[in-house]
Image 1 (tube, rainbow, N blue to C red):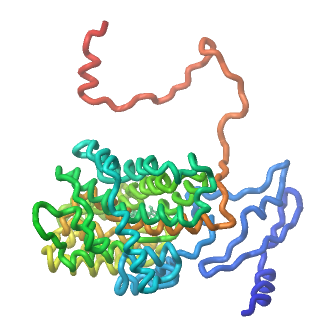
Image 2: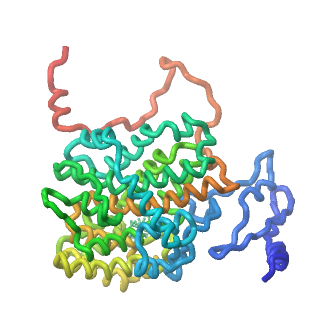
Amino acid sequence: MNRLALYANQLAHHLTITDNRTGKTIEVPISTSRESDFIHATKLGALQYQGQPLRVYDPGYMNTICCTSKISYIDGDKGILEYRGIPIEELAEKSTFVEVAYLLINGELPSKSQLQEWDEKLRKHTFIHTDASQMMKSFRYDAHPMGMLISTLAAISTFHPEVNPALAGEGVYKNKDIVNKQIYRILGSLPTIASNSFRNRIGREHNMPHENMSYVENFLYMLDKLNEKEYKPHPKITRALEVLFILHAEHELNCSTAFVRHLSSSGVDIYTAIAGAAGALYGPKHGGANEAVLRMLEEIGDLKNIPQFIKDVKDRKKLLMGFGHRVYKNYDPRAKIVKQIAYQVFEITGKEPLIEIAIELEKIALSDPYFIQRKLYPNVDFYSGVIYRALGFPTDMFPVLFTIPRVAGWLAHWKEYLNDKENNIVRPRQNYVGPEKRNYVPVEQRKEFPIYLESNKSSRQKRRETATLS
Ligand code: ACO
């Protein structure tokens, strides 16, 4: 269809809405896209009543498009995921994480020389400031690695005040070189920050990045090298983690990616925005799900306990973690690949016993009407935790292993957001149902309303409360 015909076709599609409060009729054009047709919510504002525009109500963004993007495409019903148009299955088979990051952030696959330059730029930024490394050492011995990662990312913004919009001015990110530099710094240093958080947990010194290793290989090296002269991670383990990184790199407007755009809309520096998004990803309903899956599998503990667990899920006492997805109403295409990787990893590490529980759980869930009716299928996190466990990662490192690659997607969205003519500060509206206007009442004249103010108390606090105070 030529552009004129397309335009005419778009004009032809519209909603005719009559407001029966006022009798006013408006025509709202329907825009078309590969994913879904849509209308602009602001057009409904023309339907005014008692001086108020009509708004749409959509908690949880169940049916709201909030930006135009070219980065990834999902067809949740068919189980399709593409990065910049390229199917995830092809990328998982043929590409590397560094190349995928380039594709996501810059829009095209790199030429040989572009890839080399990109790779070198990332390598150059693998070192972090010694003060940042020192700061990481001051976390408590049992600090959750995500807590360390999030705090360090936010702290790193203080090392680069010259590119912080709060200090250098709002327009600082209009400079493309500055934007690129922050991308190299963040992507380059993430494996270092992540491995430092792991080294803290195991009580070992932080390792320096290796100059001759690939992105993923260097990450494994920094995690694991002790006193060996030459330490080289197993190539199959490196590749397995690389594929997991590719699968986790981007997933359009999930909770954390939407948050990057949300935070960036305030003009905050990109380190703080990435730290905030990492906070969103940490939650058990999102990137913390792989950790939650593992804890769930451990809790089930034995095949014989699965029927009771499924019953508890159906009675709504529990969630089947690693199942269900806001967008996929079919088998998550990433979950299929992750399941294959699990077996490749087991060939090297030996079988992780929890896989038996996971497979049986999947079998039962996929044949149970409760899950079938609700279109609940395994998502990417269902098997990834089992692989991480087989690879010897402590459970609390799992969301870190998700965050490293997802930062590529976040940075792609940040760059896209910065160049988006429609970008504006994100500011949803609310449906206020609180009290009508009323006057402040002096404390002596107030009626007491029963409000629950208790908080939990430790035994130590209870003991302290028995003491005589003077
Ligand atoms: N276990 C049991 N029931 C579930 C599950 C689950 N994991 N997920 C959804 N349901 C049920 C809901 O109870 C609801 O049932 P109802 O219609 O009878 O009330 C129905 O399926 C629809 O669920 P919603 O909550 O409306 O689905 P939504 O799209 O809002 O939630 C989500 C998606 C948050 C991922 C949810 O499926 C979930 O909590 N899953 C478990 C956590 C998880 O694995 N998260 C990782 C997601 S992938 C990622 O972020 C990388």
